[in-house]
Length: 370
Image 1 (cartoon, rainbow, N blue to C red):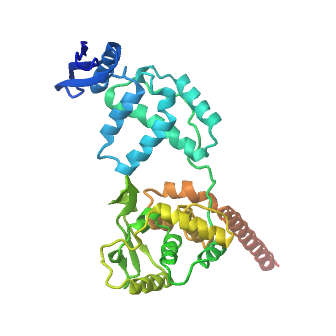
Image 2: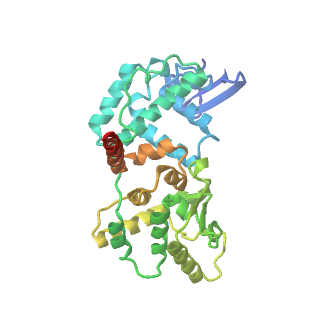
Image 3: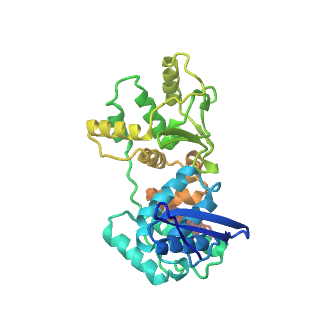
């Protein structure tokens, strides 16, 4: 494991051959170290990382993990996951070798996260899932022994039942604060009455609407990253869907199209960012004197409205583009409290009908015997 000193700069550099995890032999050169010890440490860790040796630090394995996920996960998803890991995992366990992380380390990490932050139960579960995913990948792909997460109780809850949404009356107050015929009204009408995601709404163009059939085709999503507008496929395969539109919303969208003189059919109908939508929503919510909610909560508001009007979960699943009915029920099932009462009422009615029939039969037998 040699290290060399550059006589001109006085800095150390590391030059070495290594074999990566596929068996291919390669050469690596890295300059700019202040000491020989730093150069040698870099070489040792690089070799562990390249060969996927589970003696590597967790911070190094995270690079391996995300390199493996390129192509499987969307760029935005990787960015969000990377942020969570960089902020909530690396500062606590980043310097620990993967094969030395114990269940007790996971418990200590959980306690630290819970004690130092007031995160929701669902966010805590997201952090736990990220930690578990790292060790599952190391175990499945790179031969790590038992995952330290397997014997530890999961942190947080996937369903914390803390959905925030507007009822129809609150939404009506909100939408009345806008000037008539403004673009923002159409944006929020689409969000509230279709349940689509804000990124899906911001990616819409004229051709996504079938005004004759009264349908909206969701085929893409929009987000902004590194000062660039990015349009990609929706969140999941199931997110590609067709949403039936009510007549009043079709009329509103048509009227909006009429105001867009010679507008390119493939151009974004709402050429703003999600942050701009959030800012607009916060301003008008305050103006309407209704509680503050997130833009994504309009999706929850749509579902709450449908549930209030007895729309069944399977229809809601298809409208939202959920992969599985379990996702819909786990997220919104608690908004169906009246269903249990209906079942109890049905049982009472059936039991009452049965007793009434029995009494009628007894009465008939008595009458026949007289």
